[in-house]
Image (cartoon, rainbow, N blue to C red; front, side, top):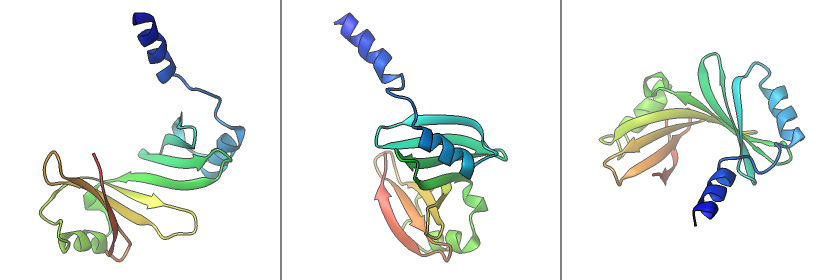
Length: 141
């Protein structure tokens, strides 16, 4: 039992394969000034954690190197006024804001994601457009 646990533990903390060359090249072309780059291979998608101008980002690519989205860490206070106004007018206005991010996707307008929590069991992500309209929500842990 101990041997199995040790082997499984080592496998789960190591990369299963090399990051595809297409992903590395696509990332380097899109973010040439990225620092502290860390690739996280999830087999179907690859997350690239990095910083740029002291801001934290997570870019998502598929195995072919196609960029899917980038999440930019933000503070709620720095979100555009229409987004904050949209949140304050939403049915979730009384919930606590945990964090915020700006989501960029190819061919789409930016979305502003606000993570909120009412209690330990009720947590959500809210996605607003630049005009402050709630586009969707999802449950989170």
